[in-house]
Length: 384
Image 1: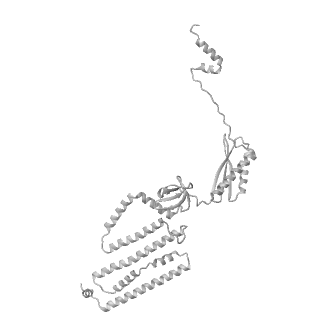
Image 2: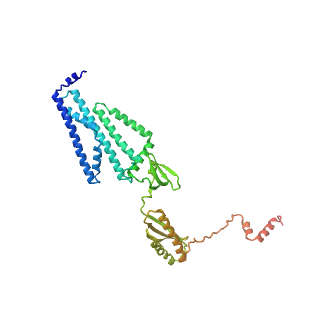
Image 3: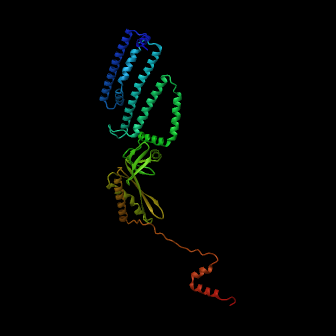
């Protein structure tokens, strides 16, 4: 098709074309100017206060403005001033959707990345320049992929393509894939739960009913722990979150309950002195709060005192040193008061049961001489 014939089919005049070009140029300059002013204002807001995350997100998002999209938009603004025939008018409307939708997708892509990274850094212990974990990256990737999939489907629908069958096929295929890899997906979502909820982080010492250790890495499927004995323990994320997890690194204080036992024949006057003597032990220790000491049990085998105190620090070595000092002081206290910690002596009574019909056996065991006489009588012949 000849270019002149093509231009003639559009029914355009030179003044209209020049006006459209001028409008496109002005639009290009105006859009760039508005974006520059808006970004400068956002820079000012970000410098005035460090606690304005919205301004920072908008500034980094607008930095992703595509010059190509701005140029295409300016051309489309110029074309809108022309009276185009019906086929070309429809095509220009499709181009409007493509350019505007593409730029919005780019903005959302950047906004998701900036917002997610800022959220993870604000709720984590990583530095500002540290890379996010694999789970964080996966979350960002899923959200960004969703934006582009939605944009692609909307673009196909705008072009007049029926996407209902395609969307249904994606749904069925997604269900089939989910059923095939449900264990992997379970660990994957457990990894996302760990990343967002943060029940523990790398470096925390955790304990479950089955295992314990220091967290070295939280992956997409497994979590790696370093046991105190030195070996590495690999636990499935889904299985790890099914159990009760104790995070000892976040412990603030330690509450300790232990018992002291003594002989049940201990006089009541001496037993009453034990709680006061135990309370005096804790006055010598720092970062320790004495709670109570009571005589809790009195049985035929022992009497028992229950002692409760709190170590005002999570350090395990401090706890063990304090516990050792309290036990040694208790041993010395019992020795000073003359209280015996030996258990009550046990007496074992043995009794032999004699079966019915054998009285002579019992009688023989009772008196050897009678047993010999009975044996001699049994050996005589009948009628003797």
